[in-house]
Image 1 (cartoon, helix red, strand yellow):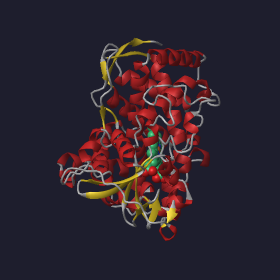
Image 2: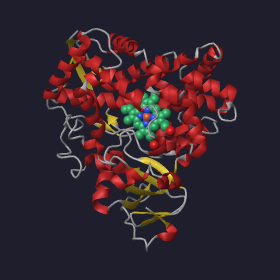
Image 3: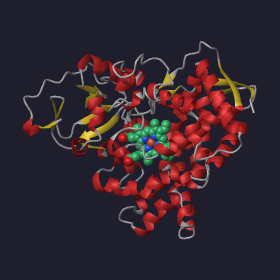
Image 4: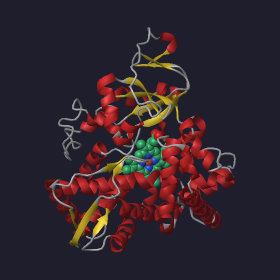
Length: 455
Ligand code: HEM
């Protein structure tokens, strides 16, 4: 990348043809990962497109992914504008995902411990129990289970208990509807604003606020009474409010306290639903995963020190699923100043999609990229280690704060589901249908048949 001052004459940036008014929204809604890959192949690393009347620059390829973590990337890209609508909906002043620079660092520091795998140290076996409880509740033997919905309840159960101290299952639908509307309309802007006037949205948002107020009361009651090493995310956020109200004012509490559900619900539920599909679809992978999880749990309780290392096939399957079904197809930013990327002039204030998932599908980096190959990640192949080719958790300053936690949460959930349940797809030929909004993932009607209990 070069600054505008030192650049040679910029290249002409290709424009993606689109429909009047709609622009490229239909192609994006159909399959955003495919759309961004096609744009890269056809137009190169930089092109311009329209979505519902708004202009965007799309930059992709490994150079774009690598840019995000560099000093130039930090100076030229900011997140603020994309999250402004959400901040406004909550009546807040700022939110972690939409903060930049020093303010962002302050919020990340407050939430780092609560969102990390350290916060679940000593609680892996409790997560197993929560997961088992979800099987008893949502996965009856002899039925066809709607996977995505069942996973949403599982994730709220797990995240609620571990990060906030309570599992608000009665709010799952409200959280889902609120996230769906806010992300679609205000963040990714793929749907018109009129949708925010729907009574169902207003009712759900009011319920999420009700949950937020309850969480504030609970945090208030715990403040000062919980030993340092037992504080959860909610305790840390509330302590920051009391001790540094200029960083965490009262107006920002609800959006911060309910944050784990926005950040962790669809991301994990969609990914682990796709893992279930991918493993059941590939019998040779399934056999390896079953052997591994049987060996793990037949020994009794989980050993936290060795747990992740004991599941190479399962973790390979999770990583491969995240390559092929990335929940964050692109990251959205605004240009903080004029800059030149790959010879193309980008102007201050332009909205940018950074197609970080584009390299996931490129044969240049992944031999047979369409093949579900769980051994790509082990040394010596380690295909994901090539710079810029694998970004399921994003890149740069906003890289997923819950990554280490999500990895353990997903490994426990998947290890346990394959250990406990004997499942099959509708038919061996079944091909996963996907949805794209607000977060790409398996369609709501993806079901598996629970044939019986393995253990
Ligand atoms: C499959 C699992 C997950 C995936 C693929 C994922 C992916 C991502 C991505 C791509 C971003 C960056 C967004 C951007 O740059 O605009 C992000 C941010 C974030 N994620 Fe995750 N995530 C996952 C699970 C979780 C979980 C379980 C939590 C915690 C409960 C979490 C907490 C966060 C937070 C707090 C941020 C904002 C970080 C910041 O703005 O500084 N994520 N995640």
